[in-house]
Amino acid sequence: MTEEPSNFDSSQFAGAADPTQALVTQIARALVDHPEEVQVQALEREESTVLRLHVSDSDIGKVIGKQGRTAHSLRTILGAVSMKYHHRYTLDIVEHGDGHDGHPHAPSAETHE
Image 1 (spheres, rainbow, N blue to C red):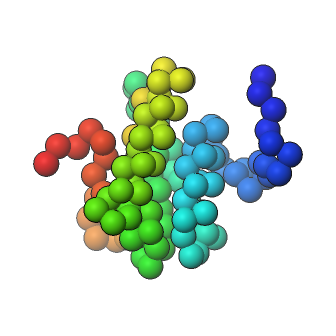
Image 2: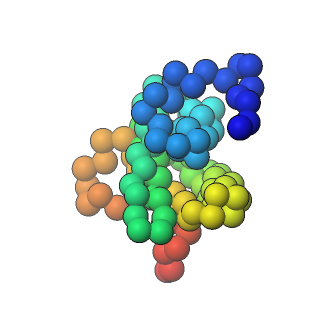
Image 3: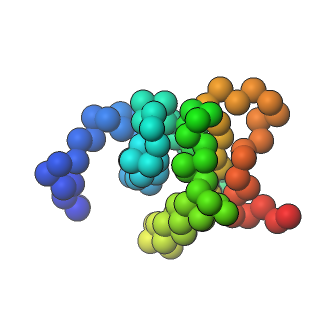
């Protein structure tokens, strides 16, 4: 069993289903101007978990980054976690209160354009 760092407060991730969901939540909160609006929803599939990252409209650019570099980096981290746990994680980034069509702004790693 691994120990949590002494400055790690697991109470702020009370809704997190697993450490990966908590990890994405913590990274996203560090990137945005409105960390209180960050939510990560885990959607369990047969052989994978989709993590839907919800942020405020004004913070969407901060989690996607220039040319999608920040989103790509988050997905790279999820790829490493997927290898460790032998369970595939994908990331969808969604604006907070996005009522358009329910589609994420940044395509998941498995989406081909």
